[in-house]
Image (cartoon, rainbow, N blue to C red; front, side, top):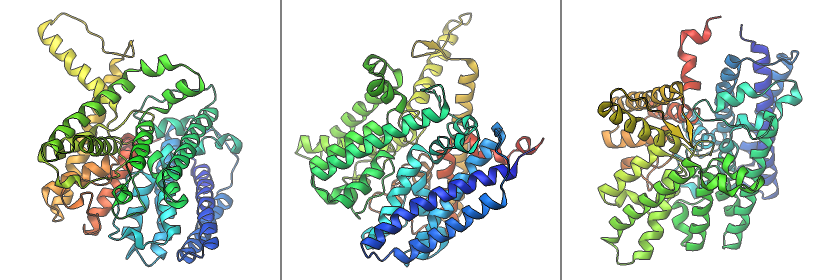
Length: 482
């Protein structure tokens, strides 16, 4: 039996937390006499009213939530975040309908970075700040923040932790799950402060610095400029953002080992981290060579290639050049990097480096089995044997990801979207990249797509952010049976 009152009460607390975040942006708009003030105030009042109503109407004795309730609460919270986050956009004069407002909001919270806005710089600064803040909140995960305070409400958080990271190896850093959440958030906050100071010192004003910090550490990609990072024309700013995109793409457990536990050996011997750097280096070298064929400046080609490779592979989606004009080989390589993504336990999207690494090991084992039919071969990761159930779960996840990808592409083409744009848009949405290729390239937006196509892509963003299983299990009869 699902405890709906308990679930809705906790969801109410999350909505109140979002209202508090909106309140901070309201203060910014008030002190800066910003044009987005009215829309933000109205959105905040609605969020406070809805959250307060759920907390009071569904008041009940706190209890431990089950695994099934945890999954349901995760999905409800993410959908609620998208709906509440859309309100400031919807009440402003810059979004024509709720579909566009919700698309922008869910793109922010899922750290996708896809936008429907043709002229980003026309948006009031307070709404630009809210766009970037949705990235930062969603980056480490709304639920991961919530499980740090759930013990205060008398509700356990382990089920939420498992639901949020259903497809990742959710290693606990400390004995208590709330302490784990706080440890990760401290690192997240520390990196954010460091990037803000670095960008500010490199010449960004405080507003641009904080907005791009929110987007970078969440690997989201929302910018305050139409031309994204290219508009700053600053190699120093680009290299700072490159560094922090790389940092955000690494498993935060590894950061904890390196910075908090002082265990550099554990950091540098981790298979996933090493494979992550190898993929970044190899892809950068390949793109640099293709760019160097048409550019006489070798070092400029390295800088542009490094920025775009890191941006796409980590799912950030910033652009320092229009890669839609690059050679077909370079574009195809970037499309492949969208599928790869960063490390597990990071803020990135994609299939994750560890899964790609394990897939290579699975394929290699099958070749060995063909040659040595009587052999028994274990797949190892970080010198530990991987169980067959984990391998099967991995293969199932890959199958589900490509099945959703194919179904979404079919839906978009049925709505009149050309094949190349459909494939690119679905990949960029599912793997939380943002800009794609074709008519949704770095110099284009998603605004021209049909309304229904935007809802399909919004579903893809949410499914990718929740690692597919958490969302799709709600559509099975087994989930709802007692």
